[in-house]
Image (cartoon, rainbow over all chains, first blue to last red; front, side, top):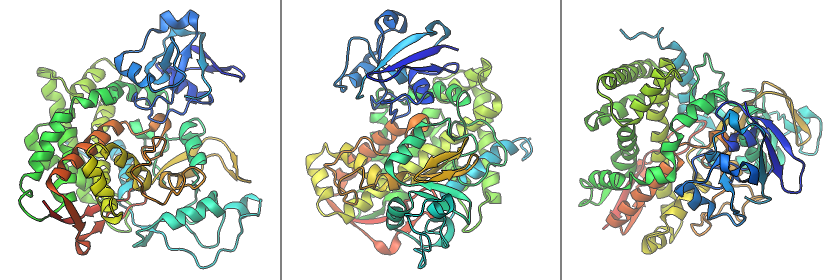
Length: 105
Length: 435
């Protein structure tokens, strides 16, 4: 089960041991990560689980698809490695992944 | 052969689930309140001599909002002694609780009654079961995916309005809003169009409750067994000739070993029922607000592209799901009191949506408000899976209704509300309209 390091900007890092098949959004809720509101529960319709994948992990995690990318366009703090946490499914290969959580999502 | 024994677990689960829709409720305001908000001990902070908020006692309470306000203002951590549950009513408290699934668990059910036996179903479980179940079909319910259904929804909506179009009155629930969501969910699941009426009759029986009786009546048990028999036949049919629908997806998951047969049946049951009644109630509640608030309907109709905003405001102001329950996994300190571990907690979504601490003039229905952070669809892991579909269906419904009706009013003599501790809306709502 992959460990995820959430780094809310300006706050302490939160380590979460994600359960099997969880998404980044679900892992964030499990860890009580600030700024992850997850209003829509993972149907790619609210962008309140916006995260930024750390540079060294971005290739492995991959890019947003078209629908996710359109949602990300509504986020003011969008960056090159932005993803919606609900659309990133975790696997064992992601153990130790670093994820930045912008102050507003 | 079908038997109660075989399906007992699922029936027990859904007896509790369906109870959320049918129990009568009582919002009678107590005349004596002996405890005051400033007291800080646990008992004083939350316990009243007379229950302010009693979702199970019988009364014809149509307006719960003054009760919600009292809870928010004076008893933000409220304990109902009669039924032994706690209630959270402020937006911030409910929003935190829906996200913190480790503290506010769903695995003991999302109604206030205790589940008798548990089969993992989406609504009544936590991770990792929830993760496994939800991810199976969540990708089918994104806005982009359901968008592909718009033409189908419109076709169905137009066909349903055809028989009433030339008249001057119809029941927006019975003639229209009760039928549209069922037609669409049948299409998604992969059930035959000619079976819709029969399936709707069965699912209606499953959620129907007699006043004051919190058990599924015999008719509901029989209907549940009929549904399960139907699902089994559909699954068997797909084993020999696969199709591209949700039944097939779940059958494949069973074959791959990620779902048990019981879970597949439970999933089909919940999908048949859950997305059905609430969308019906949303369309009806919107009619009610349009009738009540001068100018709202004509403004939305004139503009043509305000239906989406009107839906969000309706979900905030008068959404169908008023409350869902959780069970605490640890002691929770809040507002000077304690919710002990193992307690049932009612999360009052519609109270949160009327919280003055969150929304300006919350008791005003204003389609310009366009709130996207309301609790009408819940939030967190269990946020409504079908929200995008509900939005699509309600928007297309009102686009088509507004083509037919330049204006309308409600025949109040025929209005009937569902009496339920958790769902608010109409079972009958006759409209008189001008073309």
